[in-house]
Length: 323
Image 1: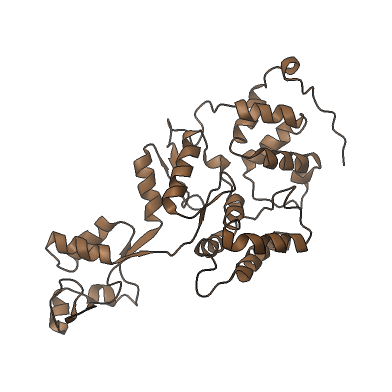
Image 2 (image 1 turned 120 degrees about the horizontal axis):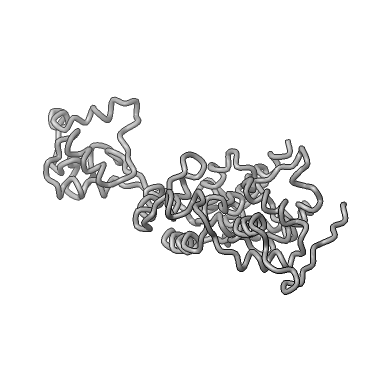
């Protein structure tokens, strides 16, 4: 390991960081002191520059650690704590938006200037509306009724009047959408449900929410038991200057593994394998993390999952980067 001769850590003698160092400090805002120290240690070993190095840190964070690694940890942490975002960065509110949809980060990042628009977008990824979600018939105490208009004992000619085959004839893939208003429009334009209150009632019945047990944050390692709690937490990060450059999907996985039903099983798995999770955070490559994240969000309460299976899946995904 190379020996580092650090610059003077006396804050009064050293003065303020130069523009490059200031930018690096801003990039690290949102990371915990422990994480910063761990990644600095990794940078000082030359880890980021090894051809075989695998990590999920955004390049902007890697560059920041490479700039700051020559300084004492105390000084770096002071700079990070005091850093204030400046200029017109990619996630700045004056350019493309202050709030970013965290479900779109892997595909097409989408920013919003207004928090209500952002919250609506986040919620849309939690629910889906499926046409004829339970079929074209609804079971009631008085027998079967038409799922579209509620008429008793509908026959095939009645269903033809609702043009049900427009959705049934698509190979089992019926119309679906993320917004209730789009389902209301679909019922009007395609299935001839002309009473607005009936359309709204039916659309609400056809909403499906993924049965998640936990949510996590990609700015810090934290888990939440409700979706509104997560939204409120993320809003605070964005309003404190966090941008897409600070989001780390590995933190999402780490946070989900902290949920009570998984925490002990994961801790035991890491301890048995002698990994340095306490001194250097484990990281996952972004490839194929979406499915793992979804499984962890649904948690071991799902009928087909158990803590050991989920922990094994997380560890297998971690090892895949070394293959």
